[in-house]
Image (cartoon, rainbow, N blue to C red; front, side):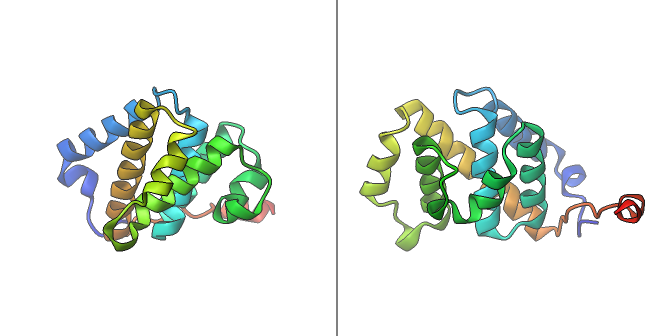
Length: 154
């Protein structure tokens, strides 16, 4: 149970952020790549609700479990394409913002895999998931626990 029902207390702000997230699904980035990015950024930010949500969403799209489990250590696994690696690196750089900077090398590396429009949309996606993470963490949204029936079947 969240600390505050933020979706009901600020419904227009919630609707607008949700609309941005919905729009991003229609871009050429693809939902699979978006969920990988959302999962990685949520791991960095320590957002249990969003890690669970985006792992499940990527799973529902048919993403390989080894890839999903490897997102946290993507640099050291063979599961990711060059485009996915560039997106994950960009997501980490934009999320962490060391010294409030995005190094030119990181920007140029991302541009090797993404058009200017795609890189802009990717950056909006990173900004959006950072906003969702901050809301979920601030108001203590947590994943829904496995039901007793599911646990009894195990």
